Amino acid sequence: MHRLLIILIVFSAALPTLAQTATLKGRVLDPSGALVGSAEVRLTAPNHSPQLVITDKGGSYSFTGVAPGNYQVEASAEQMVLPEPVQVTLKSDLQILDLRLKVKEVDAELTVQGNA
Image (cartoon, rainbow, N blue to C red):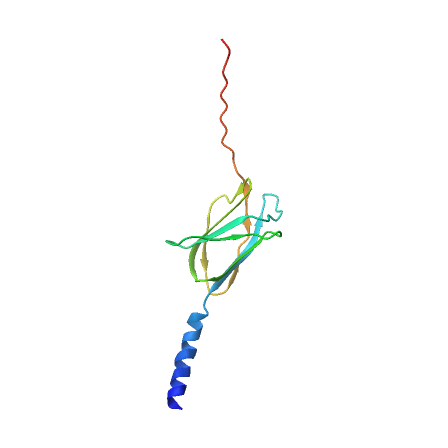
């Protein structure tokens, strides 16, 4: 009985560390505030590969089961981009982050040639 009690105490002490994950969710909006479906949202921790999700038709995204820590968030959609990456520190709870995209600037070069 005493042994079982010790095992239960050790196991219950370890549970909080096993369950500590973060959730980041939010919406992606265009410059006018309209929701953007099918946008790509990337969540990247230092020295790790990015996690990628695609927004639903309502512009919502969600990263679940993420380890708490520092991350960089980027987003893009057709002809739109997040002006700069967002730095976020996730804690073991739900955090909301809405992302507003801007229209991509197009680099164009025009060459005019005259007839001689």
